[in-house]
Length: 215
Image 1: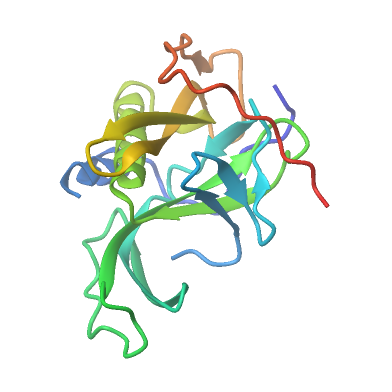
Image 2: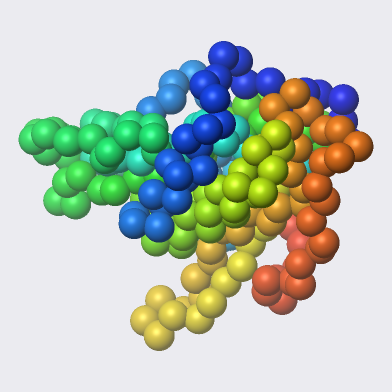
C-alpha cells in the first residue's frame, strides 16, 4: 500500500455520516480533475481523457457524496445545483435558457484520491446522471454506511474502478461502472487494523483494459 495518506482536509464528525449516505437509497465541489466512465466502458480523467491505470486503487472521500441537478447545452454544462448528502436535494430553480430539451437531470457525485500507481496523489471528481452510474454510487454509499455502523474509525473505502456490462434489448451491449471495494481504512490512512475485503467474482467477461499511453 502506498504511504500516501487519505487526509481530505477539515471534516466534520462521522456521527451523522452513515444516516446521510443511506439517503442514497432514494435516489458541487470545484477544482478537482473530472473523471468519467465513457460509453466504451473505460474510466478516463482530465481534458485529454487519459485512461485510469489498470488495477490502481482509489480512496473515496466519505464526506464528498453529493446529489442535485445538472443541465447541459451544446455538450457542456450550463447549470449545476449540488448539495451534500447530509442535506436535502436542492431546489434547482428555473431551467437555464441555454439548456437542451432534457432540462435539469438528477446527478450524484463523489471525490476520490489515487493511492497507488503513476497517478498516486491525484484527486478527482466523478459525477454522473446515468442510471448505471447512480446505482454504482448508491451501492458504494450504502456499503460505506454499513461499514461506519460497524467501525466508525474506518470510514474510507479503497476501491478499484471496474467495468461490467449487460445486453439491452434496444441498445445492445451497455457498459456500467463498478466500484470494487478492496479495503476500508481511517481518514489518516491505512493501519494494521484496516479491514480488507475478499476478492469478488468477476462482474463480466470483458478483458482487462490497459492504460492508454499519454501524449
